[in-house]
Length: 325
Image (cartoon, rainbow, N blue to C red):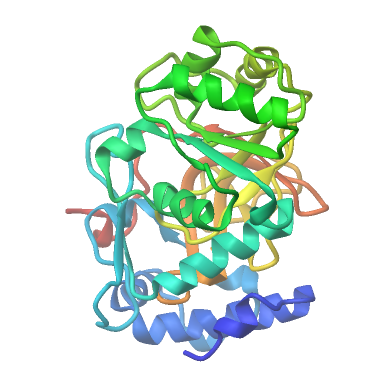
């Protein structure tokens, strides 16, 4: 489908909506599992005239189905971190370049040119498990970042020395880390680096007690002596990321959009600024599925920003035999 240039050049909501509808019809034809899901809901694609009518595929299906348009071999395969019951969601990416365009252009949209930064990453659990889309993103960005960018796995003292050295040089530095590893680090090596950009990617991965984001950020702000902690909202099943540049509000790049569904009726939309399930439209997912119903709870604001407020419990969505097995 020749839409990739259009995905990353959207200027208006009308363009976004038109392309979303075009991708919906393409994916109904080319993605057999998504077609089964739409048919299971007794929905005729010809009746889908607006974005709000597009059905969203439950994210749980990525754990035991191949979500893909056509039969092209995957150039890269990503797997989730495998917390919970141990099942790992799998994303078969048939065009790695599409993912690279998405995270590079998404990063630039929020932070400018990656070549201006020293990028350091503290992602131990992702590195240990392998097949991580987050590690892939960090690796690719590091190749375009300042020399000396890199990962720190089991060497926190070396990371502390590196941060101190870069601070003394007046360098522009970004530290990307999973929440529990950032907490472990500041407990051992607190430092004062007010110009440092710290981006937490969420998740204790069973290593530490879960904290509210405000509490986590308060500890990290004190530990790094920074005015704000940034956050990234992404997942294995998506090729795009939303970012919060301090505080609770996340924002999407132009080719990604959040919608909020009712907690008790997955096919109904929540009222404005009410808490509900987070549905994601990711147009970069053109070769898999661009319409995903996550298990995250959130709230959408009129300007398109959104909050992530937690997760649903373990109860699965019912109503279609695709959800079994």
